Amino acid sequence: MQRRLDDATVINLWVVFERFVIEHVAASCSTQANRPERFADLLREKTSHEIERWRVDELLDLYKGWVDPSRIGTAKQVKAYRDWVAHRNPRKPPSAVIVPDPAFHALVGIMRTVEVHEPGGSLSGS
Image (cartoon, rainbow, N blue to C red; front, side):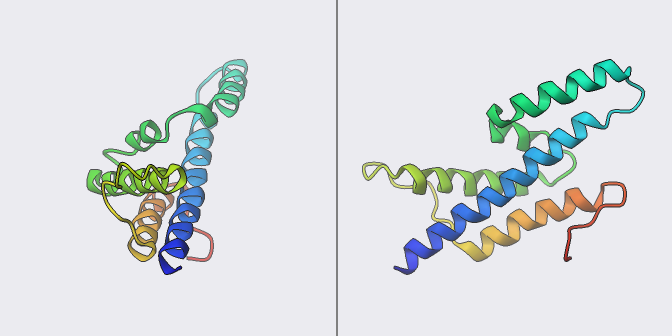
């Protein structure tokens, strides 16, 4: 039962983190200065429709050079474990077992790094 609770927690941690990444990238695309207004509007519209279909691994790669690449690698391991839990293939074990506490600290660490470097940014409640 504990393993199931841990797995559900990792899934939920990932959902919150993935939504943060998608919203941050979408907002970054829509706040480009020195662009013609029509271009900015079209970019914002296209991004908001298409970003949900982008691979999250590719979105995470955008943060390399901003966030320590090893932290991005850890986030990708959490994602791989989340995928394994969600689609469980009993013939293929997970590449790593992820537990909630380290996953939480890894994902929140990335979020904090990103938020701290945004104008006026800081995580709510931090």
